[in-house]
Amino acid sequence: MLIKQKSLGNRTSHIAVLCSVAFAVASCSTDGRVLRDAGPGQGESVAIVVTTVTPPTEVQDTGVQATFTVSGTWLDDGAIDSRHTCAGANISPSLAISNTPSSAMSLAITVIDLAVPEKPLWVVANINPGQTSIQEGGLPDGVIVGATTNDKKVKAGYNGPCPTDSELHQYLLVVYALDQMLEFTPDPTSLTDAKLLYEAIQSSAFDSAETRFFAQTP
Image 1 (cartoon, rainbow, N blue to C red):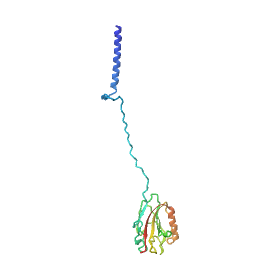
Image 2 (tube, one colour; image 1 turned 45 degrees about the horizontal axis):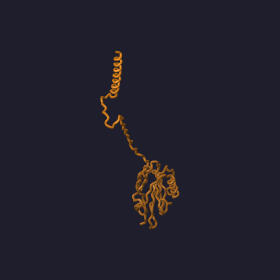
Image 3 (spheres, rainbow, N blue to C red; image 1 turned 180 degrees about the vertical axis):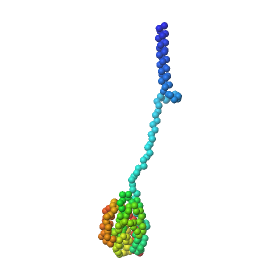
Image 4 (cartoon, helix red, strand yellow; image 1 turned 30 degrees about the horizontal axis):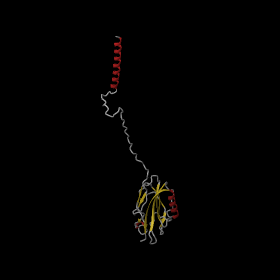
């Protein structure tokens, strides 16, 4: 009789263990889904797929400034209209100025005969850096101008090309970006003052734009 009771006790313990295992398995899934049996050759491991997200490519700011340019009514290295020479009305040409450096405090303009660079034909300073065009025969308010000569006469302001021979002469027009406004008032009839103004422009310039043209006595 005692043996039966012991056997019954062991059986009861086995049943309790099986119930505990069944309860643990059931509690692993609470959403009602049933895991599919592993197929042939499949183990019990779960594969983890890692998704890599490539960040968008950043647009690099090169910080490159657009080219500072000036253009006249002529093609670069082309002939200037006779209106702008001593053979015509001798009036200053119209100009278009683009991409002035943002740090410019003022602009200046010079014209020289490359064969005689020490005698500028046009010296203008203290132009507003926001100026994008110069009208034919005119200048913005507030500028200062130096005296010029074309070997025929001295005057304040523009003095157009006036070759005295039959040779073709090449001229250089430059627009300078200056780091300051010039505090100088030249005598409008003094070529010496004009030279000082020209030198002051060059010493204060940190960038420039240029165009070339030629003229020839008819």
